[in-house]
Length: 280
Image 1: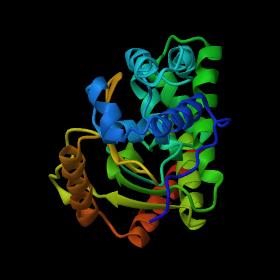
Image 2: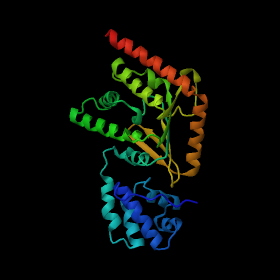
Image 3: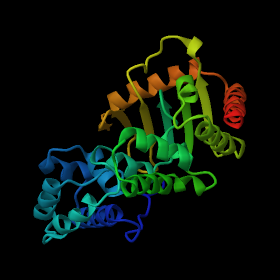
């Protein structure tokens, strides 16, 4: 069996803490379960901290310093983890996304952030914050485009999205913006960088009508599910809960159009937007 993935401590504060945590735990002769007990967390959660897929909290850092004789190392460096360009409710999910092997997502109303064109992302943020200064919107757009840079790798992560037809039909920013947004999406599909399936209106009821769903897997940590809400989010690692959401996603895939038929529909809708924009 291969050993745990080697972390690059220089890549991020989270990777630094994870590498040091693994080093100190192994030096102390403790298993992940052993170390989790005094923190009242599972051994799998300790594994996620070591792998850099979960964010270390301040109280956990203090306890780890006590148990492992860290001399304040974890508490001091935990502060760096609070410095995120993402909203608090999404920061941990975005950081986990950056180290995921696979990302599977259902989006009911919007093109997902990873797949958004810049003009579409700007229109989304203006809709979210109609009175925000332009500089604040610029920062949000820059963070979103930077987040999508993980797609510059030719194969990893594997991104598979089920996109509700409503996300194609909702005119975020007008026909010109939608034309660009769908062109960007089809380019990613045709480059075989992502898999997209459209869940058509005629599919009727389905198990994810309550909202968006993201599933992430990792090379050396348990999978996570992320549920997104209005100004809120929940990152779940409970195995039973994650399995339940995996089934939900599988049912969505079963009801969605094939990738080939989905691409044809997306391109057809994009063409309609292009013609409409040209007539304005």
